[in-house]
Amino acid sequence: MANTDACTTGDVILPEPFPPDHNPLVRKLESILALTDEERQALLALPMQVAVIRKDQDIVREGDRPSRSFVILSGFTCTYKASGEGRRQIVAFGIPGDMPDIQSLHLKVLDISVATLSPCSVGFITHEALWDLCMRCPRIAAAFWRETLVEGAVFREWLLNVGRREAYARMAHVLCELLVRLRAVGLVEDHACTLPITQVEFADALGASTVHVNRVVQELRADGLIELKGERLSVLDWEKLKQAGDFDPTYLHLVQERAAA
Image 1 (spheres, rainbow, N blue to C red):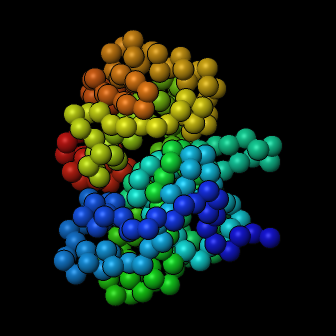
Image 2 (cartoon, rainbow, N blue to C red):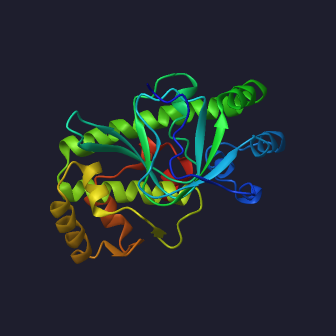
């Protein structure tokens, strides 16, 4: 029988809520919408069960019927589908501020799974509380709807990336996307960011073998486009990386990022 709530394997409930001055959900929505004081306070007042989940754990699974959604407070996740043989295809990466399963507000049975790529702090919010927020704050409801539309745009771009670009361009494109999205929520400094994603996980996202991903990373390094040390990514030549990845940030619909790019 499918779970009726988000999976909490390996959770440790924190004794204190996430610091409100650094609330990633507020930061994410403020990157696309000028929140009023009332809207910001409504977001901060959301009842949230905060938990730490270990790396490589499912947060929600395909077939679940959750009564709550979650926001990523820290760490990275992946949204994925699995074939009948158990082969995983990652269809999106999640970063702080994202709500990867917000669709469960309307679609009662999940058709995707979301797993942690690093230790994550997540905040679970009941659907009842989210519906109440949307009724009281229609602009926030519109922002949530907008985010689901942007997710659709990202999926379309990823379909093009996997289906029609060579592996070198695929990797460059995904790195560009991650840098732009992380910058929008204040997690990039001087074209450098923390990126706790392994080559195995990139392979699952790019539809390539781990060996091929390793080769592509070495080529990007040799071409002077990136430096990757452990979990730290530095983009050495942003313009050339965009060109290599055939990257245009329009599909992310971040006005400030299009201007910067």
